[in-house]
Length: 478
Image (cartoon, rainbow, N blue to C red; front, side, top):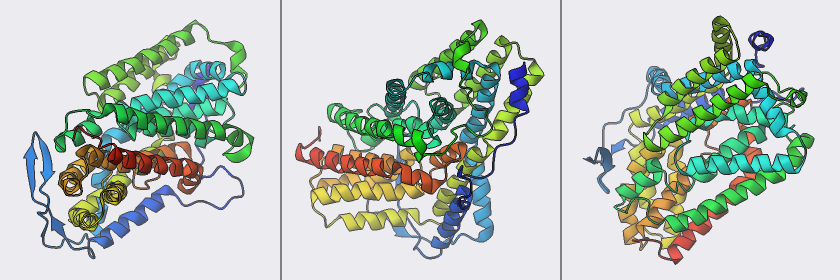
């Protein structure tokens, strides 16, 4: 009961994004995205409007290559820009609610005391145990990412990473990194991801999940490099290379003394409830196409069940849940703002024009240069089309026949697009998921980019080597 009371009465989270006292106030990610929104609106008055002809096959809208035709320019007016902002919030409602309910459920878990005690037990010890914990988390989330079980919903797990990092004396960047970077190390290849790899291969006429052996090799390379990066950052981030506190906004710090108390019977039951809920969601995502609504429901069940088992009164559960939601409001609403940029570009009818321009630039290149350019083009387009499946539906019908003329196998073409989508996710300022992660963790965007820059360079090299190797071995079946 005292834990619950303390959780409800905890002070409001700081509004500064920087945890460095005396440092210059960093630019808010909301300001950054709003500036990009305005630039997107201006671009609709400058870039020629155009639209591809499209056909529908198996419920998927496909672009007809070479069919771009000029259309009447539709420059986005200031009023329409703000309407797009509202529509972005509405269209992003599932992920926004998921983020809020994540905060609510975690607040109730903290009130039970089970979270702090369990994390203290896991984090108790130095050196090797910390590295093992980071490695295990990275591997687990990379598997969830490459299977397509966790992508947008990675935001829901970041507060857990922050709390665990704090219990080990690590920075916020490490807390977010071992969850988010681990997930996208797996997402980059998408070995069995039906939404990215499966859809793209179907659009290219390839057998579903073909070329798996080579894709597994690329996956291993991404994961190993990510683990080495995170392990190397442990000492730096502990000594002072990161922010002093890794607490999730709106949540209480993990008490170091908790390890001495261990877990009582009720707390063991709460931990069991958490594990069961996660296992059920992973099963549902893998076999029944569960997504945000089911995960939101799971967090509500988790909060109610944990509170009841811990003997917390119903009204206290509700109050604690709502305070947890309020602590993540900054990380939730930014998703809608990022989505508004895509809406403005789409309403202005310039996305198809940009894609056609890029395709025209690729035509004169040799096979290796063209494949690498496809990778870079996919990364660039992903700034405007933040949906992996949406981008594949636009690019694959254009790039696949273009690759045929350049003697590229369709497997290489598909993977070049997927690598472009995955690579840029970790620093794409229009990614609602990334910006939600950073806002939730209280990490300024530029500080995050500096943190991940060495890893991004390594990932970039892996992408180039993977593409070149795929061309050299004629990666197929065709």
